[in-house]
Image (cartoon, rainbow, N blue to C red):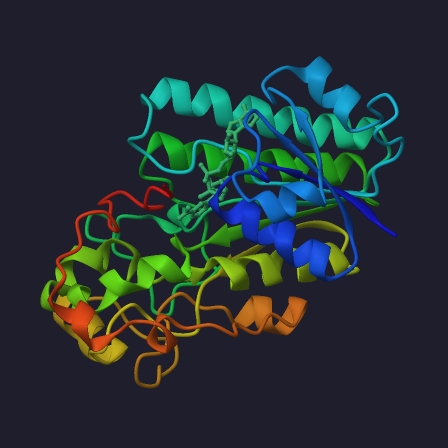
Length: 311
Ligand SMILES: NC(=O)c1ccc[n+]([C@@H]2O[C@H](COP(=O)([O-])OP(=O)(O)OC[C@H]3O[C@@H](n4cnc5c(N)ncnc54)[C@H](O)[C@@H]3O)[C@@H](O)[C@H]2O)c1
């Protein structure tokens, strides 16, 4: 059985990843500063309370912790302050970037050459209203352009990953640029987005179901890729019922298309993830939202600068 450390396994995406890995036969160790609120996953997972900004704790936790475990085969690093505006910029940066350095460095030192971590769609230049993308659908094919300190941290992590893998060509460091993560319970708010399309233009109306985010993590772990690769991970559709091309023409008339998009297809290209990871989103908000929810105004599900708060 493969033993995988998941950092941030108690968080929104982490809980879905822990479930996905357990369901697929992995043994999971959750490193987080808080225990998981998911009792079922917690019962089947080792939990070690770790502050990832402390290299010593990370180095120990990636090798062995007393009689709990003695060898780690792979690392999924998700722990972070997950959006701009939750803490001050300096607090966000000084939590997230050192944590990722510590995980990358301690994994390399421990001989763990399979690391997948959460980058973010924000490196594509969110909010797009301030910095329209060079083309639609947006993809990994243009340099990162962080617009917030949170996103700058993710861009720095991607640059660190590039160099860690240059130093060690056997190392795999896959950065998954997740779109805004949603659980099924969040979907009741989606029909209301239709009343204010501009409210979700910041990320070109993208999202990712947490279960599909978890699928992408597992596929990245199982991939034989070596070196650094970044992938946009989004749902196959948008949060809207208006066709994507119509939204783009209305809110981003100057942005050209590199290929046609069909109907409500995502404007965040997942072509690379489909091609290289065999990523295939299985879930859409359309399978869950109720018509009655159409009149419920959304207060919580959007942030103007990216990566909606995950609470
Ligand atoms: N939620 C989104 O919409 C979204 C979008 C794109 C990328 N991401 C990224 O995905 C990852 C997971 O996001 P989430 O929504 O699950 O966040 P979350 O806040 O729900 O979970 C993050 C977890 O990390 C832990 N953590 C944070 N700093 C830590 C530290 N120094 N030491 C130990 N544990 C620490 C927290 O206790 C928490 O359990 C993050 O890296 C985030 O930046 C999230």
